[in-house]
Image 1 (cartoon, helix red, strand yellow):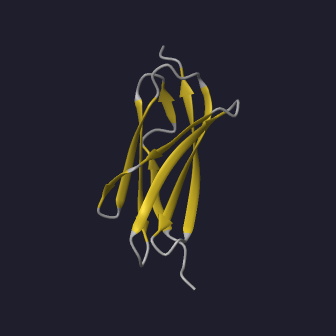
Image 2 (cartoon, rainbow, N blue to C red):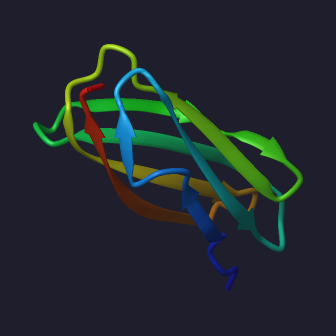
Length: 102
């Protein structure tokens, strides 16, 4: 059977972000067949979902700049999900905090 895509080197540029700044998320996504979908979505502490959005591809590296302007402070979870052309999926989540600008 085909293995699931592999999501590695997931990075959030800062664990604590200031509202108004972009959160830069990068990851490497690989599979033996082409990756046909690389989406990212965000969930706020109150359960509000933001997404899904397409990540920007550069070879095997993927990036998304999350604009936090107008967002509420609190804990956020991001979920990257990848789909290969052999229809196998993988997802990986990460957390970060948003704080008010001082």
